[in-house]
Length: 192
Ligand SMILES: [Fe+2]
Ligand SMILES: [Fe+2]
Image 1 (cartoon, rainbow, N blue to C red):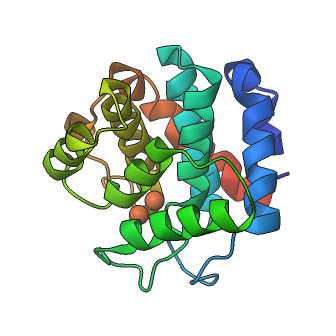
Image 2 (cartoon, protein in one colour; image 1 turned 30 degrees about the vertical axis):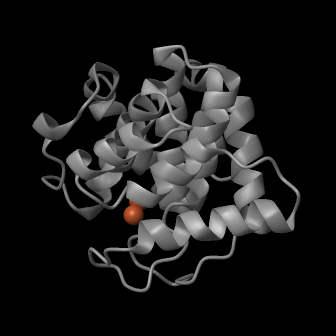
């Protein structure tokens, strides 16, 4: 299990189970268009999954909301065509998620769709689209912000200065900056 070396850390105890569940789901079921990507690997998605669940747990999200975040984390970069901005990869991944649910008779979650779809867009656009959606509540906006913070916290893989902490949206993410660096270090150890 990727990141097994960090899952027994007391910080991770409350989210160990959902992390293991969604990580396994990703490994067994989700096909990435760029399996040899340098920056947007399944290991990136695994760290985003862990970080999103940690923030979500601190925010006191429901199990259903935690699952919505988990699904978004494992699908969000699966439909990239390049390692740059690749605008539109969010929507492609969201469509993949939706089709996957239909084909496999899994419950479809509109929050997961929107988070995934707009994760590669400005917050202003993502938040206004979520606000306009009849099936999402204000909780959808919170989940979107949590998700974008988790994705941003893994920017340390791009370099020590790749994250501007002033751009983080949630208080909880600010508290996880050092943890995110530690996670990346542990993640390299797992890959050895
Ligand atoms: Fe992305
Ligand atoms: Fe990402």
